[in-house]
Amino acid sequence: MNLYSMQNKLKTKVSWKLGLLSFLLISNCVSDQKPQWMQSKAFQKFCGCAAPLPVSSAKAATREEALGSLPEGALDDMGTPDYLERVYSGIKNDFEFTGTQFEQHVDGLVAKGVELKRIEEDKKLREILIVIDGDVAFPSGKSTMTPKAVEMIGKISDAVSLYPETNVRIGGHTDSAGAFTMNLKLSKARAFAVKAEMQRTHQIAEVRFKEVDGYADLRKIVDTMAPEPKNRRTEVRVGTVRIVL
Figure 1: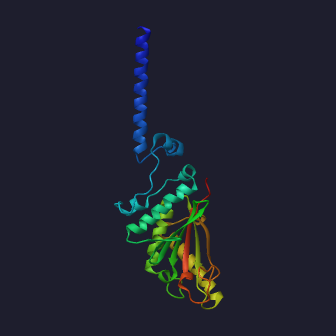
Figure 2: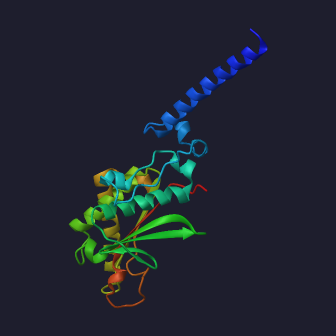
Figure 3: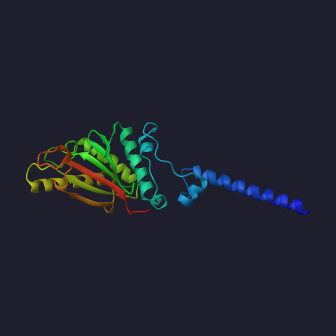
């Protein structure tokens, strides 16, 4: 066999192996069951198959599709801002899929009984804030959640469950009407009621609750001693288990 024939045979062999490798890479890339190394940011950039954002609620066929999910370990590959962008889009899409109509306000998305806000640092998402109207969530003077509050907390719990590298901070807040000591006790009881509901329905691990507390009227939105509805609220903050740049 002359040198020219040997070179052609070698090229054919290399081309065939490269073609097979490309086929295997592409097949695994589009598969739902990817090897761990294929979930790395470097590989996804190489093959052009980075995980897309959750589909719009208008296009989603199911709640699961609207909410989306991420596997354990995605935080290290994506970094905190991109990870939380996925969570934010998922929560927004899930609420909209089930009929919530948000309006864009200066400080976030607002709908009846709930607000969805972005907490940013240097224009990068660091935490997601869900504010639930106190009059929607609890009867006056009580810490027993209403059916509407249970529904909302269920959605948040779904997101926390499907995005496993998130943690949660829960805060209860009241207005200034009534005795401070009673309001403080009530606000704490409401915060722990939310935590208990998340653990009851989704068994969210204790370690993922970074903070659960009540503040009475110490953290007012509207600075007034009047019974201001905006100050009566429950806040659920969703962040990541650690900051990854």
